[in-house]
Image 1: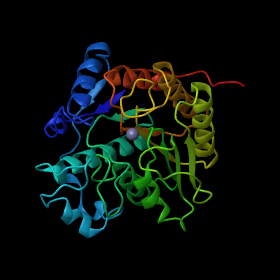
Image 2: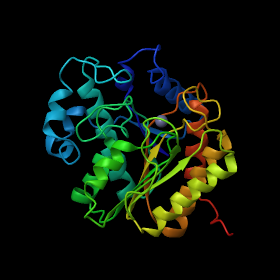
Image 3: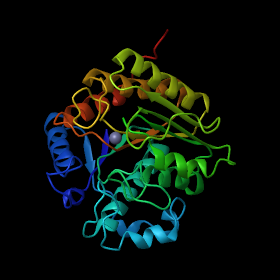
Image 4: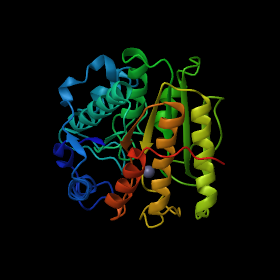
Length: 304
Ligand SMILES: [Zn+2]
């Protein structure tokens, strides 16, 4: 398992907010202790991300706005150097996508800020730049992946990713699938926007088996699209004890998601890269570990 992680990503924010530095600090410390064989690698610096790459997904005005010292919304304050922090998350996602395509082995970006709520023109929901959308468009443009799918299992709808990728809806080589709590933040994702922009809204308190069924259906749709690369918006806030959602998944369920990705690697030879999105419970390190450990195993293909 390769993990892209730069401790600088913990150098903004506060413990008074759910999206706080301890999320990554505690997860990194836990994984280094329990999984010493996993490789940690510092991603390329913020300055490595070309403006043109950011502009694949974002408007020029949005990039300028990131440098202006005013809060974006109540969840999404301005922090000093937030533009560089967000660019570091992008750099890690790009590196993870490139690694997945080249080495075809599991790779995880353990960075913050998350990205899947950021739209082309707006920072929101703890997100400033949309690294998964940027990575998807960059993989197609520059990394030789003709078809790219995003699978988003965060408990919140990946509205930013959806909007950015759907703006390329005329292109048949991008696919987006999200499974998320509805009603819930940000309120979007109630229906499919098209055959390649798919949503699985799940009601609060839905029992685990039904939530997993939606997750499986969404991943089956991703595989049926026959992508050259799967990019995973890995949020761990559908966990039963997450403080900001009302879902019911347990640690074993995140291991199941990892096992499915392992099966897809073995059966379908489709590589995947995952980036951290949400996940706010104190158990986040255990959930990430369960997901990654199952994903790196060469799982026996599941026979129904
Ligand atoms: Zn979330």
